[in-house]
Image 1: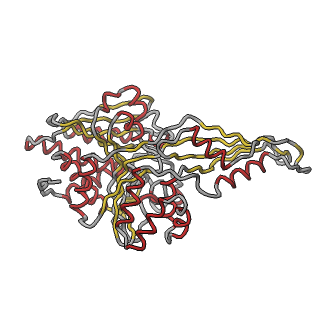
Image 2: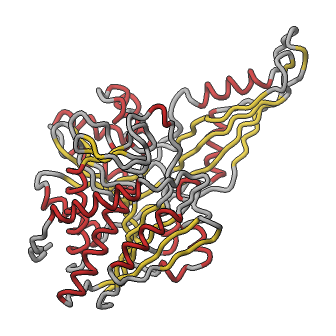
Image 3: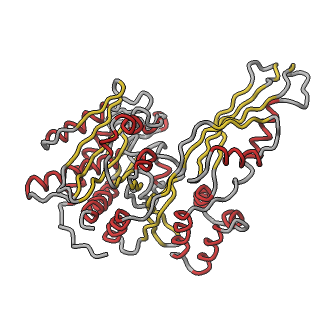
Length: 455
């Protein structure tokens, strides 16, 4: 791939602008529920209007506002969506060392709920959207494709009042070839090699209820047909080990790339994680349990018990007990095939397995957008590798994939010594991002957009 050199920009100024936007967005309390995403949308609208850009506000319910803005290109290529969500998850304020809605800068980090999930990406996207708008206005140089900024509500609670509503009611806004969203972009270190994860596939999700039936009675006279006991044994069997292995092409490529970056002995070991007969033994021996858990989640459907319910009084043996199970499924898995896996693990006829309607997973192909990401990372870190990745959770990209939009998850984030990985900071206490990583992000995302424009 040959790409012309990109112009030298004032990266310090762009970083300062991104930091200013991020601080302002973090000061918008958009905890979902209730959301109140209108606070962030109002700030975004103000910034866009100041540059002569009239955005569109989308409000399917009071206060639940998404924002859409379009920067016209030459029309030579189809649009690129810059996607983000403005809502955040709740906080335990007493466990934070900073105000989670203060946008405080301390020791080179910006603190706040949403700092890495995902108001940082929104701040970067806004900064670059405005940058390319100024470039077009002052030089007449336009991108070959329209650039669309889409900041949506309600992602953290399913998207029914955000991306899901837009897909159902305003689908023309989503006429695009590519989209950049959350789900990847973080750098990981393995054996001295840095690898950046580009989300090109995403697991689906199914909510499953295990419902145990038994006989009621007085708690002072226990018997052998108790619903709680049935359920306890079912949970124990369910969590005793992984479900059957499923290897999709994206995961095979991912693990192969990881293995190829390592010395010969480690290379052979990592490749064996793809072998159904040896995979679990290999994962159990990896020195990093976090890596083992992450790889295991990419190779299997997962079923995690979360919410348990049973009983109405301490001295009454309940006749029913339930647990809700959060299941994340490999692309291609159906409710029927997942139920079959669970039934094989839990043969007890006293347990009913009830699967709700599901959100299917998907897998994307390599496109010029991946090449642009690879090129952009190479400009910043020539020794780093970009690897396709299966995101084990879900994002709003699940609404875009069925529309034929190539949606990659890529929020550029360098690992930093002594700082928890971005996956741990998201939804955690003292969520934060360094100014250095904002600089890295603005450089990489600028180069992705500019490079894609030339491919």
